[in-house]
Length: 236
View 1 (cartoon, rainbow, N blue to C red):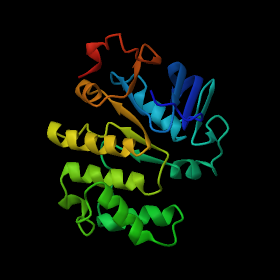
View 2 (cartoon, helix red, strand yellow):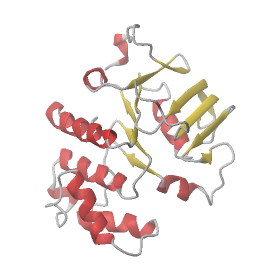
View 3 (cartoon, helix red, strand yellow):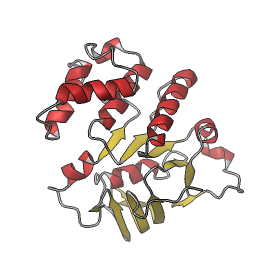
View 4 (cartoon, one colour):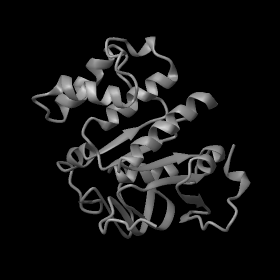
């Protein structure tokens, strides 16, 4: 087995995860190291997305301690949050592209917003090539299929060379064949050393594309042990 780098890119220790005013997960322990592929699975409402929102400092941390990309999530300031988010990539189920701008303009907007001054066109070409969309830069989002839009969303997540990509149900709106292509792409990115944390309720995906599995249920989220069966009711 490959030896892990000593410092995790994401770490939770005895952490309570909050959604609004409600604690949805108690005592989360989770370390994500460079090169890890970690699934967070569970029924709707078990706190999966709340973990992602805590990692990007959208939700405040409850009790315990947590860090992401070198930032302390318990003490992070409003000024630090943009810097935290620049160090990671986020992919959503619904793509969240700017529909009134071309693909190139979508990506350029992110680069300008995160402080890039030079080599913007080159970086856009690099990430579009990485996701197989290098010929789509001039297209508008509505001219692309759902799978193509999700590939653009992944390209956007790669722009700032993140240490980790957070993917919240990235295949949820896609048919099985298209979802398969997205998973192969994420797996290839992971093999290059980028950690990936992916929320899903699709059992077929986390069984086919192997990774560590964190199971959310009964107000806890714990790592699945290989010789234990995952509750079939996790999938819908």
